[in-house]
Length: 400
Image 1 (spheres, one colour):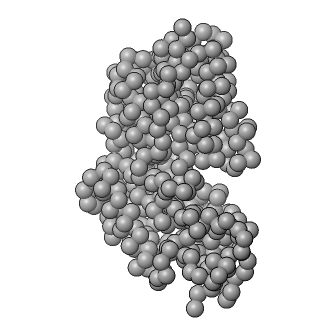
Image 2 (image 1 turned 120 degrees about the horizontal axis):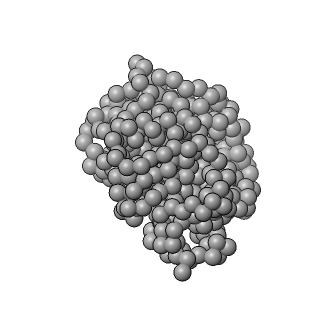
């Protein structure tokens, strides 16, 4: 028999309303012997079945839901979940099978959004970046990799289990090839642009696929404009701007390694326009541009997450306001601001309120052209706000 997790009475449990997490503070008792990572049955205070999930008593999120049906959780279960994720991406993008032969990039599995909590799988031009971020899913790693080979036929698989969040689950950090080694620097097509993905040393899984459609949307507003791609990382936004007819792009990131990826991609695309690359702190550089009077036709802001918890939201919003305010001041009248937040703890309303305040302090008017979020291969579940994290806005900056 499975171990049983009994929920406390007189608590409004979010799991009753579709949320995939059960917190330690919601649990009354656990019946039966178990090891961390085991599959358990969750029951309501009246002893009725609620769901199945894997248990980690060392984590604040003690149970992560796998199924709301009383069924066997075995290799076949995980294989079917991966197959469903592949089918969903096929329906979204029309990618022909096998995915491993496609030149584009896709998030194949998005953790809770694909009902596989803790599993993140990205495909970059046929190469797979693989993460198991929770103890329960890590125990099924071999089964999951086998399923990916079956349904994707990748050119290669690289494990990126070097994310510090694994330590919260009691897991060690590790990274390396799962199978035959390959060149970790990958050329990938994104909306007709060649971008470079460092699957071994790049940020997160190697590239930020959640912004792919936003880069395409931004492109149509940037023709003929001089562009600052701030927090550029590997240059996805700036490269897309060049394809869209931007007159020139300054790629800026604090990381010289990130700028090397920009340079490599720029060379492969053979753009015949002005490009420059600068390793700098964006906050400091924007103040410098303001003092010198330098202006841009557009500024693209894609900063890292400033808030890792709700406790950090106030300071994060202050940081977002500062960088957006400074950007507004160096944009020409009628120019474009494309700005983002990937902090899940900052709500869309908080982000928009911050932009309003920044515009007021900068003494400009923002005309909001586009309000967008993450691409659909990062599925959002109703009632699970944690699955919706990306805010992206395209605005015209008016100073008259």
